[in-house]
Length: 460
Image (tube, rainbow, N blue to C red; front, side):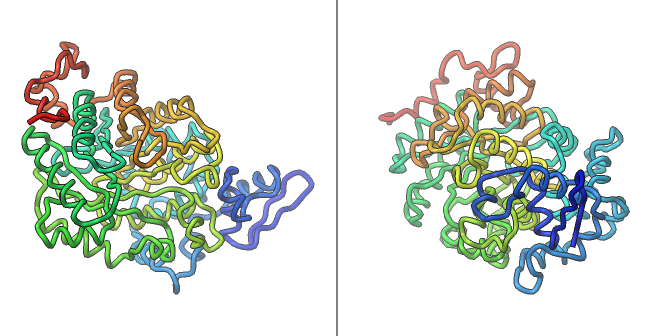
């Protein structure tokens, strides 16, 4: 039981998951689940109590039962006591102050990461302003490698997302051309397939591999099929660079995705065995999103932001190249408007980075949410300033296959110009060789390189 007094009233919280839920800034998903604080005063009381909570509490009380949840077992059993010793004497509020201190370095925070549990990270985010989330995340540096190097300071990578409602090869190729000319694609050229058929997935993988090889692009490709589809294609010899899977923060939610930790381990080993990377061996690509466990009725009475952070424990077990929180994709039932989406995006980015993950954010919203492109512009700028590893590049910021709004190639280019960010170094050198940068080293294609015309619809 936990308690705090605000004014003349004393508030009592039955257990840790209740305290965490009541301390969470308001969002529609927690209201849907019946977990939100009833008043602003109750929320403040919960935040007071949470700030004074010793970090060791999270090692002695779990929010999802250890006996029935393999994600909880992963969190507890993999906890690094030695790394934790540097902050084991602190409270949640004390750890926030520790992270904000000028003395903190990227190297020190990387060493600390294995000693922190997702629930600790989530707790810090609940008592932090947006500014705090940005400052703390910007101190973290998580670098990963496959055919290029992602996450270096001063860099911003872009996933080139050339989705097409019928997986038409000509439409996909035209979108890839558009993205490459504007400097997108260093994070990954990744297609969400319109169907999950093995035949279609193989065809798309082969197409992407042919384009990458023909143009000697130092990047990686991925078709975001279910992990079981990708595993079967690996066995059949398909050109798989990265294995993708959506993941969540409870065993039951992952089961709803058709996965468990053993399956992810099998996929990780299978993808590593292909040895397709040239500069590194980070071969997994995970996507997450607040509300996924609730939408599967697998949240165990835990707030959606804490469960999102728990998904990062799953991700870091497999040393991914990319982790992407698709922050506004699930819809207004979980994040109602631009304000809630903005906070969630910065929370996810901070928690993931603090836990040692290469975080990207799909700055996005559905058309029935109370959000628009101004909200997306603001969040994109905040995340870039906070050091996000990568963002999305979608033609016109409008994904015509998935039916949601994201960020465009031009949006990412604007952030690189405004905040002085460069692409991944190997990809930047490739852009220079293609003649796609000007004398000031800005990505400014004057003409289309003649050999790129092979990507145009109707080209031989």
